[in-house]
Length: 462
Image 1 (cartoon, rainbow, N blue to C red):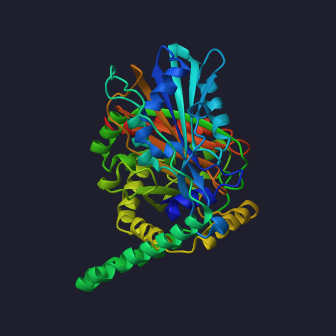
Image 2: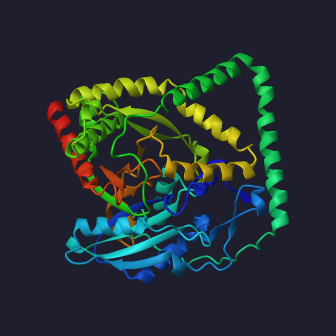
Image 3: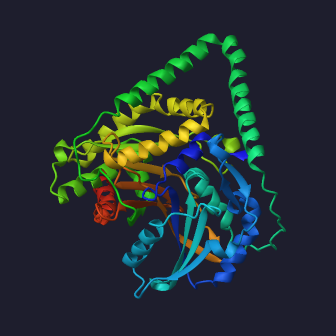
């Protein structure tokens, strides 16, 4: 049986009807709009490359094991492919409203955890696909991999006939329990097998262990409570969404001239955008602390085609108090250089590995209880999330139409009212900003401020 990892399962446990843990992307294409049946046929030809799209979550009785993936015997592609048109004039505001409403609805746990929406009537003879998939299936890197599977690198790529498929028999409850504990034993054996390597290189093992402990301590120190801000607190079930984009070449000019990495430039501009948002809300930006969770991929080359989560994270305080764009960039460069040697990401990966040995009947209830507590006593350790994923740097096509834009969506959770996802595609960097509908209706301010911050740095670079 194919069991979820402890990290994959956590994304399921975090959902409570208010926190929706699906990821998504908005892909905008040149016209004309294809027929819905053509989209269904395209997906049908790709499903054998994405087995998760025909599998559903199956729980082990009494939570005696982590959930498993099983083929959905009632799989119906038509259920997962939706069709909608935005009202005239089909402008960006209408698309953002639609995206927010689609993201406000949880995925059906009784079916495979994904949806694709065909969106027509966009301005300038364009149309779009909204691809919505649960975080327990993919992280950011794997999500980009799904797009590259579904779309084509050539405009006239032929479509093969869909291969035949039959659902595998559903295992019974006893078999799930036996397999779960056998799998737990395999995880333990795999962990024990590392001991001989430790004995052969005790100094290396000691250094690695010291790095993990150091990283955990650094992570823990960054979990102190921050001063209250309007961008953190309880959330509701509904979402707002806004987006913007910049030329990747401009960011590279800034990096080359002013220093740092592309990610440093991105974080500096996001910090500037948060400063603008807080100022527009009448808050003290000079005294604000905005701590962001930054996911870090630990996916190896041999796991590029695997649909699961291979991520760790670091915590970083965005330099909101710095008004000057260049000084802000230098502050990011210094801090990120230090964080790269902090071993936070390695410590997170080690915790996840050890977590696979934890009893499932403990992890699920504890996570759900913690989520309920945070709804009443919201955490103020993490104020936002900022994720940056590299995408394909070449044009992709859907049924002969070129994809013009590819904009990501990141979920938010209790205590975090705004999140920012960044994704590069074919020479552009797209920023998708998620907000809680009731407490962050002004996320457009943040999205629009990012290109302005890039322009400010670009002027300094010339």
